Amino acid sequence: MRNSAGKRFLVGMVLASATVALLAGCTSAAPAAAPSDTATPTPTISNPEETPAPLALKPEGTALQNIEFFDSVMSPFLTDAPDTGGREIIDHLVAAGFDKSQMELTPDTTAVGLEADNIQFSVRMNNTCLVGQSGNVGYHSLAAPILSTGTCLVGNTRAIDW
Image (cartoon, rainbow, N blue to C red):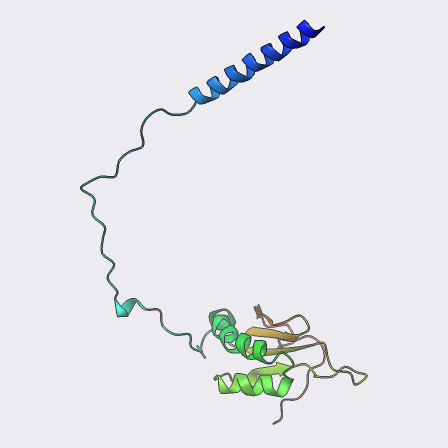
């Protein structure tokens, strides 16, 4: 028995060695190509004309064309003050150049007088909508088509009369 186990061990070792040798033969023995002595790095030239323009409101644009600007205005504002109410949100959008008459806003409180978990706000832009949400889910936004009602938000909204 002992002799049989020794033979199996030896056969196993031979098979393992053969497998390693076969696998080693599958690799390329060709040396890696040396870098060319004639290639010279192209210098990087900074061109101030190629600097991307700062984000700006495009009043004649669509929601999709303005969402990056919308986010650049609202994300840091709501990150710094996550409990900001609807009036402050609207005032901040107006200060950034958005048209107050094109905005919608959900109430800051629920029907039973509790603080709303989330506030939605929107700006109509050329028959499209920038929609933002702030609250217990953080800040989120999207560009969307205007609803068949001619509004951007579904449900009850509050008057923006200040």
